[in-house]
Image (cartoon, rainbow over all chains, first blue to last red):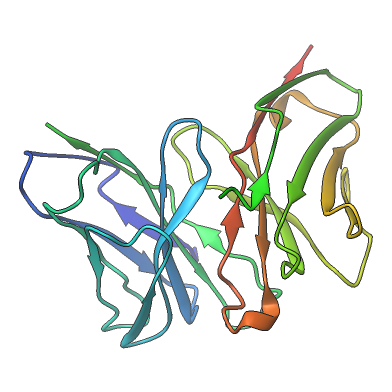
Length: 113
Length: 115
């Protein structure tokens, strides 16, 4: 089945540690995205990549980093510089044309202890 | 600055009746709009979209209406079913800015369909 896999579903880390969230897609999509959702809020764009080896900051990139070495993979690192990292993180992908909607994974809930 | 607004955090509708979810936007550069449905602890699922060259798009029980002059869109679900109970997000993008797939989301409306 084609889709987007985010792992793990739940992640706990100690304050001050970097943590990397995995996102893999087998939809052959060129573009991939990372969003953050907080309670009562919409999805906010962290980073996006429209092609391998290229990515751009979204609206709330501070304290996060990404890489796009393969078309299928777009890992997100939450660094210790991110002041409020506890949130629900969603990865998405889409084709290269504007009328191709983004498809989402099931998310990773990150909790900082 | 909330460029996409869903002013109703929640909506309750009886099964079989029409559900109307509303969305307003402020950025006149937005020209492509989408609705997503989200269950708890899952990722959003794409429902329906509309381009600014249209004022209506229909897919089964779901219809999206776009009023460009009012910068307003709405999602109609007819008839509503219990399985429609979820959070619905409105999203918008500006195709002519070179970031065709960059979406701005509203804060969501929680729809509850009662028996």
